[in-house]
Image 1 (spheres, one colour):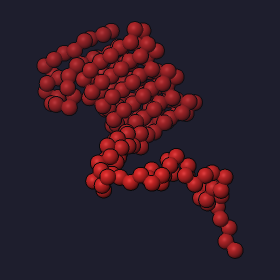
Image 2 (tube, rainbow, N blue to C red; image 1 turned 90 degrees about the vertical axis):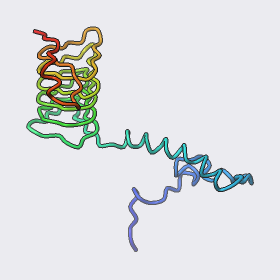
Image 3 (cartoon, rainbow, N blue to C red; image 1 turned 120 degrees about the vertical axis):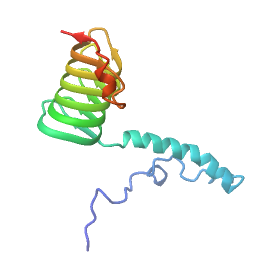
Image 4 (cartoon, rainbow, N blue to C red; image 1 turned 30 degrees about the vertical axis):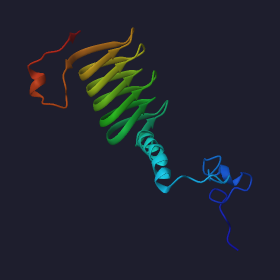
Length: 180
């Protein structure tokens, strides 16, 4: 007799209609039928589109470096979201970086959106939006598309404004804010 794993087996203590996340898996069980197959598809299309777009954001690749964790000497690529709660010394190219209050990143990063509650030190290129919160501190060579600094947030180093996605020649002729 084969043993069945408790993790992948059928749960008997849960009603069948709650297993798939839907309180009523058959909305037409009460006898009401849809007007047509096209009406069912039209009604289901917006829900499928909304779930697919939110799944792409939430289901993307995410790396979390937890508190008291030190990650040194790595190159991080193909990561949609990096969450730093510990210490990261790395080079990275990503979509989103979030540094928590106790988190720190040292190195080089090219990203679309950065949300800094902790510390960043190094070369930071933010293609879209850099947000530095009240507890955030960013130092080094910083390039950004848009900048938001909450009262109390710190920004120091060589700061350049410009659409990074365009050409680097556009940045050469436009010196940005120089902060000591």
